[in-house]
Structure formats: C-alpha cells, structure tokens
Image 1: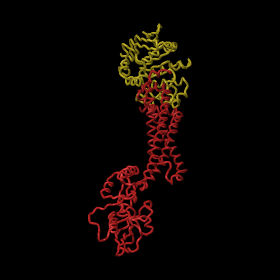
Image 2 (image 1 turned 60 degrees about the horizontal axis):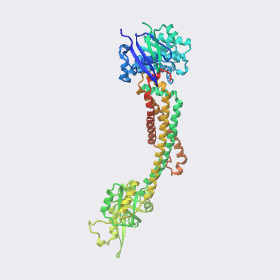
Image 3 (image 1 turned 90 degrees about the vertical axis):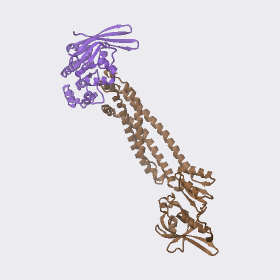
Image 4 (image 1 turned 135 degrees about the horizontal axis):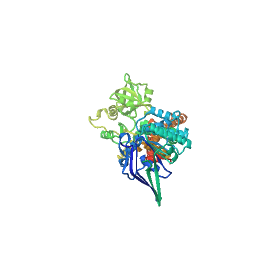
Length: 240
Length: 394
C-alpha cells in the first residue's frame, strides 16, 4: 500500500553566521490516518523538520520525499523547483496547521477563521464550520473575535480550522506549549481524537514527553551532536 | 484575489480607527486644494468670462485711415484668428436718416455701420442682416420708436447747387442690437446698402462711379476669434504699417493672472500629492509590517503571494476613495458657504468658488492613482513574506 508520507535521506542545513545546524532524516513512513510525535527539546530540529513537511523550508536534498494525499502523488522535493503555485495548492488543499499560539487572524471572527482554509481551497462549507465548532465546544464563540477567547478556546478554534478543509495531514507545532498542564492535556487529546475522527494523519511537534507517552504516540526522536561551529541532529523513528 | 480583497476589508474594519485617521489625512490635504481650485476657477472664470463675453475686448481698431482694397478684407476674412471683419465707408461716422417707410419725411439721425451675419458685436441679431433687412441700436429704437418688423426708409442727403438731394433705401427692421453694442443711434446694415448711400453722397449724381470699379475702403471693423488671438493680429497689422489700438494689455494681464494662478495651484497640488503619497505609502507599508504575522499565516494556509498583493492595493484604494469623497463633501460645503458670504459682494453675483464635477472626479482619480502608486511600496515586502514565518511567533 502507499503511505501518506514517505521520507528517506532527507537533509537540510541552516546557517546563522558561522553557526551551521544540519538536520538529517534517514527515513520514516507515515500511513494515512496515523499520528506521530516529533519529540525533542527546543533547538533539537523538530521545528525544522516540521517546516520541511509544511513546505515552508526547502530541503537540500532527499532520496525520497513523497506525499500521497487523496490518491495524488506529490514529490515534495520537486515542488521547490516547480514554483510556488504547486506548493500553495498543496498547502491549501492537503495540509492543516495548528500553531503554537496566535495562529488565528485577529481581524476575522472565529467563524471566518475556521472557514478560511476551506475558502482558500475553493470549497467553502459553512455547515461544516458550525459542526466542527460544535464538536470542539466553541460554537457559542463563532461570531466573536479571537482576542475575546481564552488561550485554550483559541487552540480549539485552531484545531477546527486545521480540519475544516478535510486535509489528509495535520501539522501541529507545540500546540499546547502556551497552556497550563491540565488544559494542555485536554487540548492535545482533543487534537488527536478529532484528527482521527476525520481520518487525517497527525504530526505533532512537542517537547512534552509525557503527553506523547500518555497518548501512545509513536515518536520520532532527535539525536544531537554538537561540534565546533554547529550541530548535527538526526531524526529517527523510535518505532520499528 | 476576491478572498484577499475581502480579508483586506475585514482588516480595515478591525482597525477602523487607524484607517479612518489616514483617510482623514487625505481629506485634510485634498479639501483645501479643492477649495483653492474652486476659488481660482471662480475668479478666473469671472475675469476671463467677462473678457470673452464682451466682443469689444476682441476688437482691433485702426487709428487714422488707410486705403484698403476688397482683397485685403478677403485675406483677413480667411484668417482663422479673425472672427469678423467688415469695411467702414468712412474713417469716422457715416451719417444717415431713418424714417417710416410709409411717410419718409422726418427722419432720425443715425450712424450707418456695415455689418453682416456673424458680427460678434450684434451676436445672434447679426444673422438677421440681409439685403433689405437691418438691425438698429437700442438707443435708436428708443428715439425713433421703431420695433422689429417695422418697414423703414434709410436715406442720405447730398447738398448740391440745385438744392438738397436724397437717396432712399427701403429696409425692414429685423432686430434690435444688444445694449452693450453701442450707446449711440446706429443702423447696422449690409455693405451694399452702405455703399449705395455713400456713393450717392460722395459723388455728383452726374458723375456716378463707373460700373465694376472696386471700392477702396478707408477703415475696417475687425474682431479676433478669441481674446488670445488679439496679440497676433495686432502684431501682423502693425507690420502692415497700420496704427492699431487693442485691449491686448488688459487681456494679457488677465491671462497672466490665470497662468500664474494655474502655476501656483500646480505647485500646491504637487506638494499636496507628495504629502498624500508619502502618508499613504508609510501607513500602508506600516500596516503590512504590523500584519506580517497574519499575512505569513495566510501564505502558510496556501494563499498565493500574488493574491496577498491585493491587500495593500485594496486598502490604499479604499482609503483614497473615502478620503477624497470626504474632501469633496467638505469643499462643496465650505465653497457653498463662501459663495453665500462673499460671492455676490465681490463678483457681481457670479460665484466666487466654482467646484466643478470634473474637479471632484479629478481629485478622486488622482487620490486613487496616488494610493495605488503608494501601495506599490507595500507590495514588495508583501511578496517577500514567507509561509515559514507563519509557523511561529515573530
């Protein structure tokens, strides 16, 4: 069977002055609908890997970097040579994003924030916006502005927004780092439950080891070797 | 694109106070400019309009006399800068008498002035002049009591040893000349009539002019097409050795005021436009800079970069539109007050402040063009916003 995501020998080097940070991903596959965690401390390379997956950072090279959303076959490495249009389209149709904080547009109501990805993808669906908001418990906030909501409520809205256009892949970057532990647990569980209910795969970057364990998420771990003038991080799946 | 425009509008609604401030800045610059333009237009229209309305401003007067053959008149008539030229039979007045056709015994003294259709002095009344139809001045109409439609006799007297002799021409009064044409008693009639009366008066009846001999005229009545043509005509006629009197000084003064005010206004407009452009550019650029996180989020969510360009364009355009509409409203209101307060007092009833719809259109279009130009400043940073910035806090 084809997997949603196939990665092998993916690598990228980021430089800041004389300092170089190299990330190597020997390989992993992500089946459709699966959920994994990128687990590591700040600066371990998990954000870099998430950026690569989000088509927000060009990799230096890869043996295989393939994405199979909705039966399509997209060579993610090739999209960096093919121009922005393919990437924009891929991001708009096939990926949902849950960001750390403030991932909502402050000038749009909750309703329009949730609806936005579907509108960008050209598939507006007001009924689905309402249904998602109801499931995530923010239906009564639909016509309020994001700043009127608590941080936890905003992350629920962000989850609804990540799912509204029915993407096969949801990327979450430290989605609970701004929340207190109890709320963090709740939101993380909700994120996992909702993506699975929608049949979407989930890749969540987190430093919260306990959360990954509690939710029994397969983990990609980051081994860092620091040397003179830089560091090399190797991201390996801990499952077999 | 449409989605991006809607997002730009939502952003404006969200930051309404800020954008209203920028729009009011546009208004603050545009409204006084519009008023100034209105005042300039009002004053110049009054001055130039006054000159254009009075045909005598365009008259080129020959001082003294000069032998002028019919060919000279043909040449002048052919010039595009000449509105009208007619011969004068004498250097000064050509006296005639005018009386009722039914009983042409007692007449009223009048001057005969050669005219023809197209004579600016008579305006529309000149169209009525024909072989046997004449126009009389208001003064003459007052003295004689003649009205349009009256049949009259126009005659000239010749004193001879055998006693006074006279020659009569029959004519119908077709119209009364405008009051501004003259204050004297004047008959405006065709050249043939004038020539016949003149020929009789000048020559002994026995030695009538030989048939077919071209008449030589001593003077002319000439009007330039436009006030701006007077100077050239004056120069050309001076070059022909004539002594000429025109209103070219007064015309030049008025036109130079118009020119100077136009230049002044252009300078002020340029300053205002530069101010508006800089204000808009800075605020649009600032807004894009402040909204960088939101814009990069939109990129991350898959909105193409070229759609995001619409963001500053829509905002700039709307600011300019709101600003210029407010400016137009303000200028019209204040202009109306100025007219009510000063108009009648200074300009004999004509409006001191004239803001034409074209001015308002020009202001709106100009502001819009400036806004789009200014928003280009914000387009470059927008194009550089990367989706990766949307991933985390700045």
